[in-house]
Length: 250
Image (cartoon, rainbow, N blue to C red; front, side, top):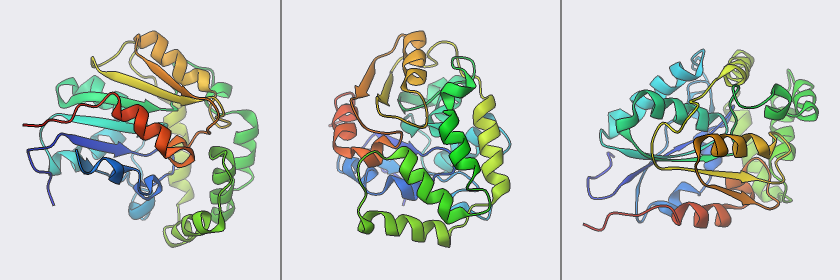
């Protein structure tokens, strides 16, 4: 179903080797006041059999085409990690299409060192998962979510990973594309909001802070959550984002 014209549109973008599935119920929290679109990057989740585009600009064009097939007006993008890189590139190339950006726990190659963008411990832990997709999924949980997950929470994620197996070629393409991406040196649109987590063990929280400082845009910091802020504390993130959103009432 295509978004109706009476509500503003929110586009939700996930990050490296993550699917729209991993938002869980978070986008639905906004569905009463906003139309929600959740595109899927080829190679991830429901498009696991597809080939991931080779760089961030190409990924952006694919995501943009998915969204524009549903809605042609201005949008707000809520994006995590590599998804935020895609959103930044979208705003750089097509600023008139972007109402605002909400960028969560992200980094840029031209503003942070490689060992800040992925900590050494995280890199080697992920490397040791090569060839074992389910071990990779469990390691991602451990690295990105600081609160304790119950079996009822983690089991569906493991099952989803098993039923939608990542291709290792796509994993490495995404890693390389994200590691090389150099984003805008100033804010590509006026309304940009940043969110990071002090407890992020995958990406140094200073990476997001550095972009916010360079772009001269506001930053909100969660005191304890991990890299997957939407999963770690969805209540805090929803409230923080909603404080910046203004639904149309006409």
